[in-house]
Amino acid sequence: MTGVLKAVLACLVAGALTGPVAGSAAARWATGQAIRLWIDPRHAPVGGDALVHRAMQMWVEASAGRLAYVRTSRQQDATMRVRFVTNGAGLYGGTGAHVDPETRAIAEADVMIAGDAGSDPLERHIIIYLTALHEFGHALGLKHTDDFASIMYQFSRPGDCERYFTGYRARLQSADDIGSANATGLSATDIATLRELYDR
Image 1 (cartoon, rainbow, N blue to C red):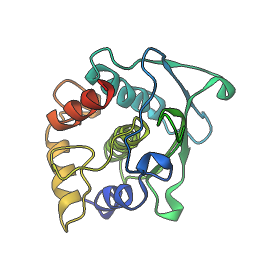
Image 2: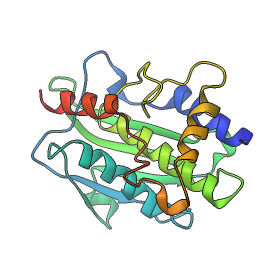
Image 3: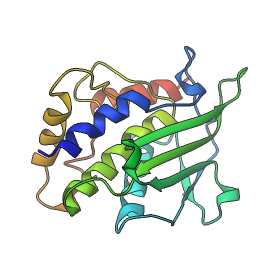
């Protein structure tokens, strides 16, 4: 396990959410309206676009009809924007959300994902997918949890990251398995928390 993999979730813990969603009252997207997702094509690594869409699709499927998203090719039409960035600053992901302070409805979200992390293509794809999954969780209104099996786990103890990524990678036969039915990256806690949030 490389130092990059060990550092990924530490970064997610440190700065996973920079927007108002981190407040005490849970925020969420309005139901009945599709989230319009735009991915900045600049700096996108090979396969990055597909991994990001796969991560968003996992949350939509987990919502059992409570959420929907559509792709948009125009940034100005998007309500959720994803940008690939370099990890030169040591950041592998971050999320900022614009939340109505009265209704707690999420109006827009911006997600950043490091596209150049990892020492080999499989490692890079795992980092991109799991970072997108974690950051989308925040962008949808989920907070950190104490459940180690959860992608929203806070990863605060020594060795947490290595154990998490080792466990995920062990479920893969190839890069094509990332985000598959056997390796969604979502736990029962993630799914239950999402559905409870969107059942309000």
